[in-house]
Image (cartoon, rainbow, N blue to C red):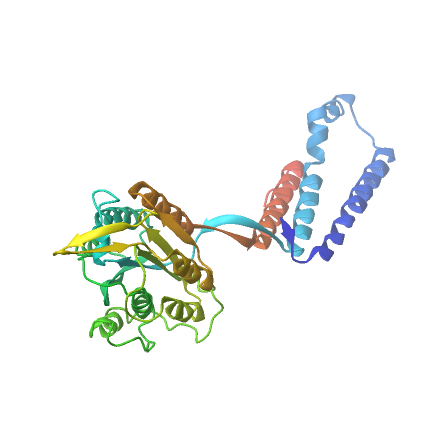
Length: 345
């Protein structure tokens, strides 16, 4: 725990002075002459339990004052709280290499299963969107909280040629910020993609014109790919666009480290994901890069990302909590004093 105003702790020095004053007052009362009609009346007052209860109001009041002094010093601590992440875009590579069987039954099927589990694990108030990219990128499902629509979008993913990672990032940004105008390579995006993203996401608030990388706590992109850019804008340039809006782009390189050969319609191609580019995208946007070589590893990565989005450790000021404790202790002190003096109000 840390203190934002540590100099205010000097107020705690008043506690020993108050204790000393209270003891002095008790001593004076003890020496004051008191007359009793009968010693029978004195005997119950000498009971140890009642003697301790006599000091309970003063003790509670002292604790209340100490809690108030701590509250004035503005304590804060790093605690785990529900994250402010509320919109997540899943950008999934659907290039032909995703049909490779090195991750059984094939890469795309394994990626779809992991995405379904991720969607189901999110809190009900988290909006999720789905973007697919191959030679072009498209919004398969605009951000929504409807889990059935999202699961249906994952099932609709279809393979296509080429890999435009940069286009996938830009279309994901268009889904997050429909009020903004983007200038991607027009030959790499489907003609209705940006208009469709704007139409389906009009309720999104306009983003800040310029933000520090990774500072936007209301949205994030998770990009999964098993290949390297073969068309479209440069992925690093697209990542800079995300960084300018404070959006973190978590990247997942999917597939075995050795790569795989895909045979389709009489031709074959060897594919291996571009780890250096994926790391650069994550670094530029203050996110993190992951590598998943198996379906189980991909499931684990999505589980870790789920923990990131649902719970987040952050510095939280505890002033209100300490002030509430001080007020509660003061109320208890007043009630204890009233009960002791047999006066009820």
